[in-house]
Length: 243
Image (tube, rainbow, N blue to C red; front, side):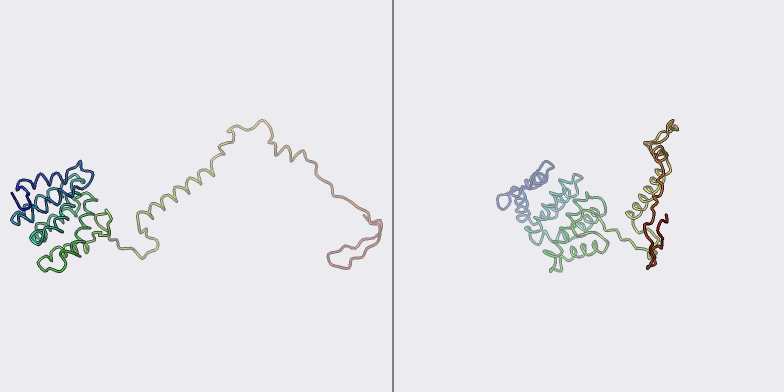
């Protein structure tokens, strides 16, 4: 029997209970029992972290996400012996394996978030725990995104200064769409109208018939009743009885 009435054999079953796939929410009473057991058994710290990491590296993302919740609770509550074990080369290796494509994107994003939190919190001021801030800085320098995004890395691209060079996949897709639309419009313009007949009409068109049947209007003629002499450039001189 351990301290706080926690049986020595309860850690693994409680860990499985706290991280099982069917859980719909965190069971904090179980998680805190795990923390109590680690506090009561300093010699079990290394094995406890190993067991927790088997849940963090689980192929099911639900299990892995809950494993990270347990890990963070232990970092916050289990004292320096647990922190020293986290700030170890073994843990560093697990982090790099998970963040280099092995983990589900959501799991990787949460692990990055926790590393940043720990590097700026529990592990910041103690030189014995410096490995966690170093891991954080190394991953950040390598292009890993710590903004909360689920992308594993921020891809670094060197952009060309040539204005004729396509700089991104989006730009290339936009150009392809514009070319396709232009070809479609050209084809539509050169093909017959969808509403027209492919056979010549036996009757003249209504427009043609109308224009042919409309008589041309003759200009009107008037006779001058008196003489008028233009005084302005836009006026016309005429005489009485002139048509």
